[in-house]
Image 1: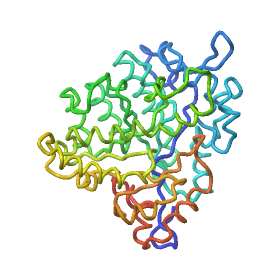
Image 2 (image 1 turned 90 degrees about the vertical axis):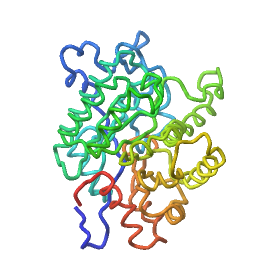
Image 3 (image 1 turned 45 degrees about the vertical axis):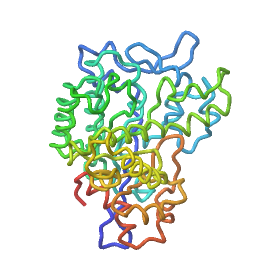
Length: 385
């Protein structure tokens, strides 16, 4: 692993992904739930589908290969029935030793690992106890995956807020197993329609604050698009595909804003939040807007600080490799508040990402580059250098 005595600073991928083997939940679920396991099968027309408690994820029908797909042709992956889930899965997605080889080739020292099938199932679950059981199964699997090298492979627990009591119990169990943080779906149905300040969720926020476990929002592969009214009734018009893909970030931005305006950072001053896979170039303009609107509407706000002040006290945001203004954003926002992410092995990920992110940061002081490349993630998640 790179050390601070060498020429290049330690490099931490703050949002890498695994591609869970199709039998993960069949193997890791408790026997009482195993007949309701998440699974991949073929429907009556022979098309591959993701089944969640027996319900098909229609948005992914025949396109499961596009859950991975790094370096592959998107037209091929997005054509229904053309590719299987495994076709889009490079070994680095499901084999920890292969992942370490990918990290070596990409010059990544440490990767924080998030789910892939896990970002797709929550909108289909109706049973809160089953949702928590799905999380337990995944969390046990990701801990086993990361046991190949617990220094370089860092497990992030998946927690579902549909079952508030179960969420508290599971986050404590996952922390004991070594999970460094928590992935939360930003999707409202994933928490049973509850707002973040719902009293039933208070024990969860108190627990992650007490445990020092940052939470993170990440885009989801929802069954129903947030902006459905803007899409066509025709079958797969090209513009709808691009539109929907671009607006995956919408849920993350909305969830972050809701947490801010509902006072979660005021109530829980040691709660930490990472904003992932929504890009970073928007954040300075959005914080300016939140600051201004919160001042104008001061009689209706419970916040004692400006939103930008809470952000700098308790949040980080992930820069993506395709963004061209990362350097100026870091300079304007401050070097302590930005991390970076590869998104490997997803369809919109690419290779040689460390080289590219270093180019984006090249005009900044060396200390700022060091923070964004790895030091911020280590600090935020309490990881050893």
